Image 1 (cartoon, rainbow, N blue to C red):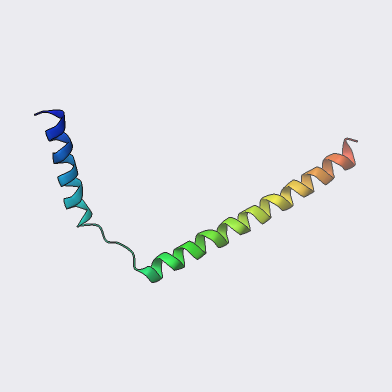
Image 2: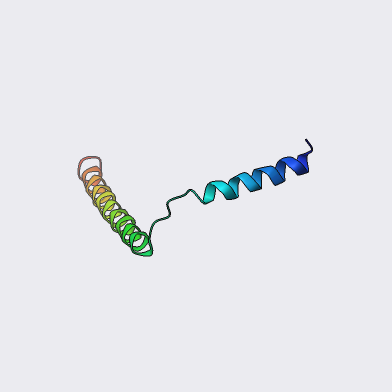
Length: 63
């Protein structure tokens, strides 16, 4: 089997597998995207608050 035949076979099998995928609905995609953005914002706010706190403590006790 040549490299070209292997590539064609791979693409055919991949196309076949894509038919079995259970794709999310548009509504689910939007819902999960909003959830990911919200969690990312919350984590960044939390880490930013920790950064400010540690910076304050270092300035207070070290300098």
